[in-house]
Length: 113
Ligand SMILES: [Zn+2]
Image (cartoon, rainbow, N blue to C red):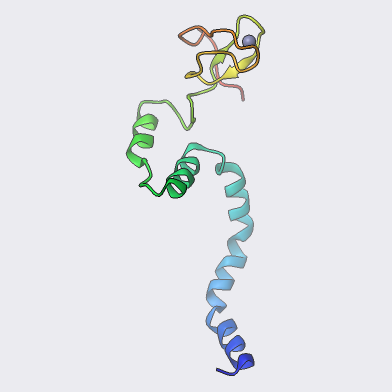
């Protein structure tokens, strides 16, 4: 339990963990930057904070129905009043001007790329 020996032993014992971490941390950083703003981590973090199980089957059902990986639906709505586009399909009012949105996405509209 000498401090220097303990420190060196921990360094040796963690060698493989540190090797794997250092080899993948760059990729993990890129992956998190791309995926952390999606519904799955949103639900997971909120479930953790709320101390409840994550609603995994609800997310999978939404994906199976083709509703995509969006919190409030794919960004297919646009406002006929102000011209704002790319609002989620579950939004009932424009997020920019507050005008009511049509109940169904406009024909030919698509998610912004
Ligand atoms: Zn508007």
